[in-house]
Length: 91
Image (tube, rainbow, N blue to C red; front, side, top):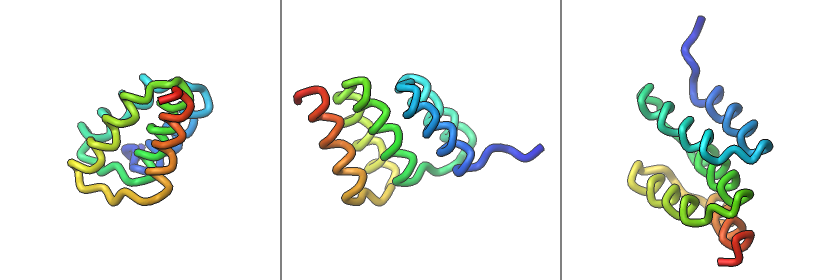
């Protein structure tokens, strides 16, 4: 059996997003990193969106910093997702 790759993690994160499971999504990010896999902009966009659905805007902001520190290319989609997360929380 093959080890999970970034596509597998991103699929699992999509399920977390649909289910509003932001804590599980953050835990998956940690698991991804312990496996020495590199998260991409899709990973962060999905987790930020998941946090936004739960009005966890501070966590969403923290994830943007996390992505930046890891050298992930932040694009307009990720930034718009963050703005939406803050907007949902009325922040």
